[in-house]
Image 1 (tube, rainbow over the protein chains, first blue to last red):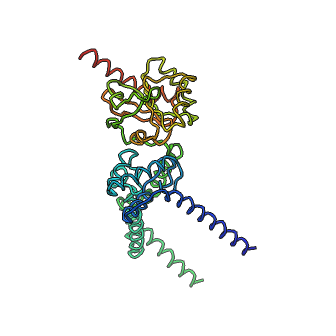
Image 2 (tube, one colour):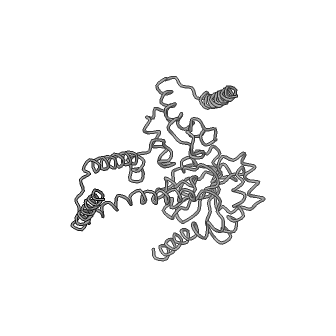
Image 3 (cartoon, helix red, strand yellow):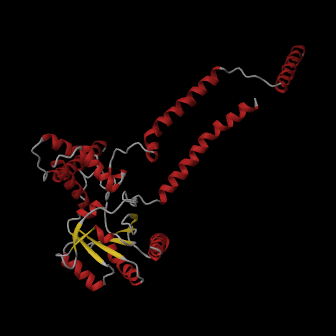
Length: 166
Length: 191
């Protein structure tokens, strides 16, 4: 039972991966490069630029017509000798920071960059404080509390005396 | 001693505050539309272009047709069902005197687009024919319909994604358009 389930799961994953790579290859095969450096840059870019239409896909793995237009434009710019930054700037100027999967450090994106660090620091701080307060367990008592403690001790000792006497 | 307990309360309240902040943040996410991207072009002049007229492809328009007065630039195509839904509303706006320029975006064929205008009515003062979608790309268009509000200086003021209807016009586009028109008319009256 368990075994057949695992086999099915593996087959499903295999099908998903292979269909993804077929679609991916189809997206790439029309672009021919003489220069392997340019081809590498092209592959890098289409994996980092986001398709504005499909939102959670890069322009490399989206089949949307707009993604194809953006791949064409990226290809054209690279063939004309554009640098990576130039292509990214071109896309960001038209579609905003949204178009690039590596958002720049800005006031509006600072939470993305510093958020995890802040959470870790706060967590470390809390742990540190708890450990410390456990170590200095000595607590100062107010006068009222000391008086209370004294009466408690008194009553306890008198209790024990009574116990002995009885 | 009193100060110490106050600090304690502040520390104890921190998780609660963080929780409330997260709740508000996520609640807002529930009601926001992630497909509504603000245009990167807002506050910038419209990109330069040269495009043929949809009726007469020998006639070429440049970005100058988007300057000189406040207007709407409506991106549309016959393959886009929402464009059909908003078309009648654009006809109404045009009848009220709103100046609309059309940008036909990657349509199936020019004949189909012209036929659409002949049968459904033509609310556009000028209609640009962007066969390959390259000018639309310069505008940051990622679908149709989209509607840009452009001021008299030819700068993009606002971009609306999705259809223009009564609600959108009365709450969002109309007030901004009327404001631009007022500024434009008062500037025209005292040159």
